[in-house]
Length: 87
Image (cartoon, rainbow, N blue to C red; front, side, top):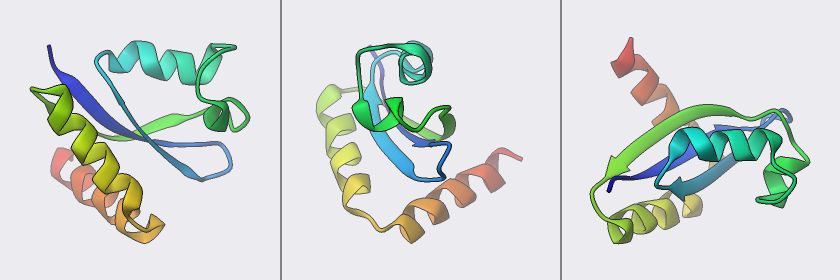
C-alpha cells in the first residue's frame, strides 16, 4: 500500500501538511467532513498543492515531519519546483 505526504493550501492561504494512504478520500474529508483536522475544517475550502508517494508508512511519516519543520517559504519553493516539473 502506498502512502502519500501532501500539502494543502487553505482558503486563508495558509499551508497544511499531512499524510494518508488514500489521498482522494482525505482531501474530501478536509473539505466536507464534520470530524477530522480542525485546522482545515475552519479554513475551507482546501486545494491540493503538492504530493509525494512512499512505499512505507514510516518513510511517509518521516517526510511529513521533515516538511512540517520547514518555513512557509521553503514549502512554497517545493510546491513551485514540482509544479514546474509537471508542466
